[in-house]
Each structure stands twice: as structure tokens, then as C-alpha cells.
Length: 347
Image 1 (tube, rainbow, N blue to C red):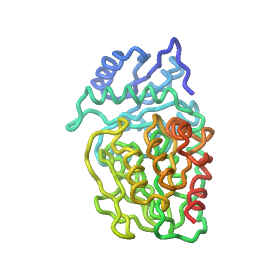
Image 2 (image 1 turned 90 degrees about the vertical axis):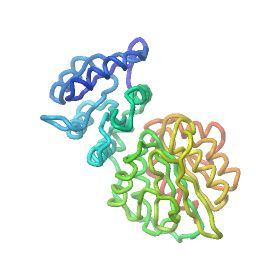
Image 3 (image 1 turned 45 degrees about the horizontal axis):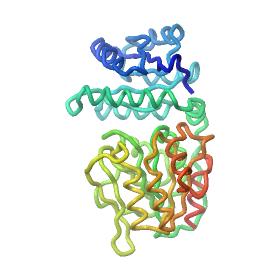
Image 4 (image 1 turned 135 degrees about the vertical axis):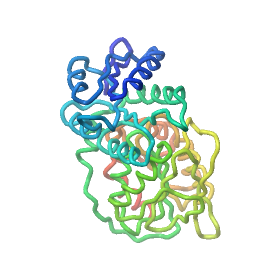
């Protein structure tokens, strides 16, 4: 957990662009709880500034001269673990690199202002992420990166009309990698909302697909929910479950943010409660806020079995805590037991 002085969050900015450093420094200080203690043009300078200034949160670019941000992140998490926000451009190559950073310990990603993004919106998002990062359980973040279990198969008899629905946010990249890697090739059809910006979900789904026994893909409108396939909601859109006879499918739709999120876990879980009911199993994993808690309760009231990740294994015990508080989760389980528990409940 980051330690702050006088209720301020000490932030160090690492970016090779002098313009970006200037814009961030000028705009982030408008938030009273944030103090910019320094800037660095590359990881070598950042290393010295970290030792000198002891920041609470690092805002880190990915593509930099002398050393890229991912390499630096790997070294940092082994030598001096701390919350890191990746501040990256949204090119296809960049999104893949930023995703890799998240899987190696970064707390979250904020997209640099560009053609589709306004500076003000980006700053507001970055401020929220910095506040959140200052409260993460960094010990669990590091542990999840180092101790990710190897893929192994769990035997089960698939019931084809069972649906698994999962929601996650901060820390969810690592948590979902752990959970989905433990799913067998014949696992029940699975639908997932992970809070992520547009374009990142496609890279994330592809990486999971390469690592796991199940087929993982970014969901498209009309995709069937079938045994052995995992559908991840695309960033910037809501995903809902639909049903035609005995067959399930997903719908991808636009709409306002729900609980400040798009995609929203609540939106998915609400639809699962309506169309799958007792044929569903729901899980809410690590994340800030309370998105998904109300939806998980609706699933439970509709007859679904529900679980929440326990506090000990969460990077941020926010969404699971909110679900537990309102009685939405039947039980809490540690991260390494989530997949096994879901599969058992589907039997």
C-alpha cells in the first residue's frame, strides 16, 4: 500500500516527451491531493529520482529511448515495487505493449490524448487512476505477477446450458490470466467484462487465447456463448447476454456509462440474471468501486451460484467487498481457487 504524506499522493512522471511532461505537470497539480514531486525523460533518470524522491505512484510511458517502459517496469517490480500507471498511445502496437506492461505489474493504463481523446478527459481519467493506484495492495500485485500458476486442466463434465459470467477491474488482467489459464478446453461458455479502454481488449483476448486451453476472443455482436469459448466485452461498449431457445449469444451495444464504466459488469450481470438465471455461475474479481455488486445480487436472486475473490488475494478489494457487503456472493475464495470453484458449481 502506498504511503502518502499530509494526505497528498507523490507522483513521478517518466516520459521522453518534454511536452507531455509539461502538460501533465501543469494539469495534474490542479487536483489538491496530487503532488508532482518530479519528472524524468527516461528510466535511467527515473531510477535516481525514485531513490531521491520516494514517490507513491509512477506515471510511465512505454516507448522511450535507452530503455523501454516494460523493461524498466520489470526491473522496478523486482527491486522497488510500487504502483505504476502506464500512460501510452493507442496504436495497435502500443496497446499490445501496454497490455504486456499490465501483465507484468502495472496497475492500469491511461491513453494519451490523440485524435479521439481530449486532453481534459485524459487528465480526469489519469487523476482517478492515480488516486486508485495509491491505494492498491502492491504486495498482491507483485505476488500475482511472480506466482501465476502454470496452465493445467481440471476434469469436469460439461453441462452445455451453463454460463459463467465474470467481472473484474483493477488487477483483473493478472487475475483473469490466472483464472482462464486453469479452464479446460471444454469449459462452459464464459462471458467477461474487464474494465479496459477500446482496442486493449482485443490484444488481451488474443494473449489469453495464446496461453489458454479455451478459445478466447473479443466479443462481437451475435457471437454464440458455447462450451470451450470465452468472450471478453470490447472496450468502450456494453455486452449483454441474449437467448434464443436453448442457445445463448451476446449483444454488443453502445450507451451511457454505468457506474462510470463502459463496459459495465452490472450491465452484463443484469442480462445474465434475466436470460440464464439458475443456469449461470457468477464471479466478481479484484477491482476498485462497486460495479457488478448489484448485478451479482440479481444473479443470486435469480438462482445463480455466486462467488467473490477474497480480500487476501485481491489487488484492490473494492468490487468484491461491495458484493459481499450486500450479500451478493455465496462465498469468497482465493484467486487460485476461483476457476476450480466455478467449474464445480457448474456441475
